[in-house]
Length: 535
Image (cartoon, rainbow, N blue to C red; front, side, top):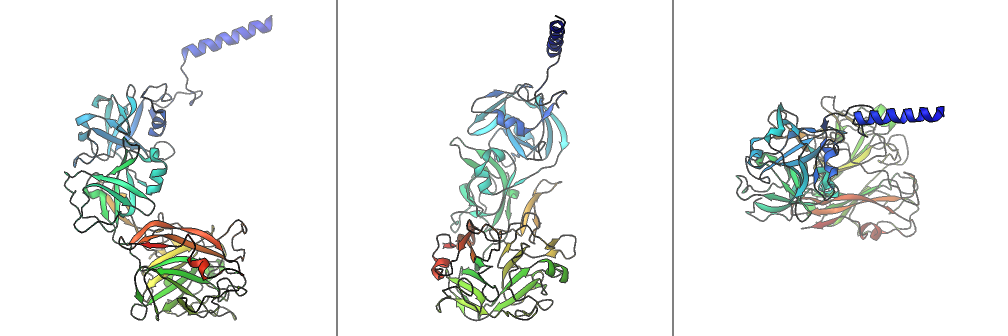
């Protein structure tokens, strides 16, 4: 009986406590913050209108946001105020608010506290938005910081809900198909960044509608949903379209044999493709390899980038012969085998193969063709270290390479190791220069904290900002450990548009095992994943 009395007493106290205090499952034992995050608001919509309240906002009632819309040019959907925040997990998320003519009163960078209780989360014309609010729901908080989602078109298309109604940057983009002479950006166009196509709309009435498309541009703007379920991208003004120069390349790196079966010295090679006819006697080129294994890092300071020499970089000149547009071209050494010394097949005599000698005896005997800050001193095992540390290859127009030389093309290989390949604190910056290709961007765009306009920011070296792409050392199912001496060829296939002067499908590493008994030149050149040129 005593036990029952105590149990009833406990139940009674709990009931009284629950009747007096409202609790929220996400905030056990405490009062929730009344400022929520857009990241928590957007998922509430599940194909049905939702009236926003403290109950479904986990106790929150407001959003602290910054405005990213600007209706001065009238290129955004009329009547929508577009705001974003990054309160949760540092993720930038946005939402549009239906506000009618009052939306035009607000401009990029305005900081607002918005009471959203009683508003309705709905989808109109394909855009997720909040309706039912007026200016009385808004409290001005001066100016705020404007973040930007620097993403690829593929990322947007894979998860549009993450980026709708946020300020986004698509770098190194161009119209696709290539614009005709006299064509302007007015109307509906497709932009391509090498990872996909995105519909961009520019109202014919805006002041910049007659702008000539850039050969290579950075596009800043806001993605919106459409009634058809697709995504439409809109810039806010002419400042959102930034000229980024050119990404045209005459020689493309299309494959790398960095670890042939057996001893590497004399048997490594690089496969390339020309995007135009090149006579190397008239327009010479050079190829430079970098290795950054432990010995190189400790013995040779990286004080001149690709021109450093020592145990860091080695250069050979390409000054004779030539290559035709769309044809493969190989740089390699005296071994001339498809896969190592025991391989059954050599490169045929008809192959456009530019041969240099790689010494396979002695101590650090390989000097290349010189012309660097210090004499190269590579070991007998080939220019690729296969150590897991970062290494790479760059093609240069001309035979003079300095710290400031910009490669014609460049790719890096790494498996976690990055021994001293970049240091922004050095003057000049310690590192390897990159170019505008499908994997790297010499320039990006940020938002000026005062003017809120897009500004160009240089990132000229590998590992600066987002320039961290590298191929892993090749592995496959049969050889799951890197550098297994299996003769794995890294085929770097993509689609290069000659007219646009850029990659419209970025290169992907496809590992091809070169079986010594059967691998031939056709294995390298007729594979479905080889690079393709289009006009």
